[in-house]
Image (tube, rainbow, N blue to C red; front, side):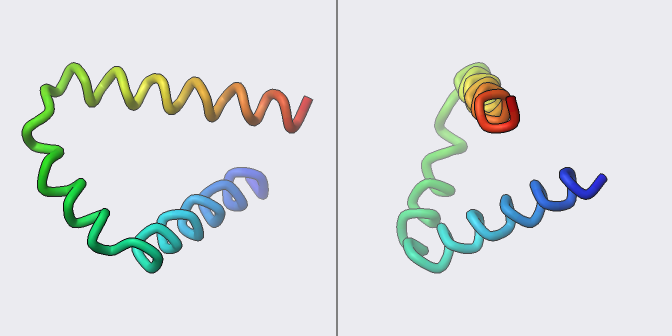
Length: 61
């Protein structure tokens, strides 16, 4: 459970950093996201999850 909470905390740190460092980029991205087909967003999400799982596998062994 501690690892899960640490992961959530790191997610919030990275998310907050993105909003703090580049708010105009985030607003622009939010504006164009509805134009993408759901299938592309889903595939992008699956790829991101796969990269994350692979990264954790590499780091944690």
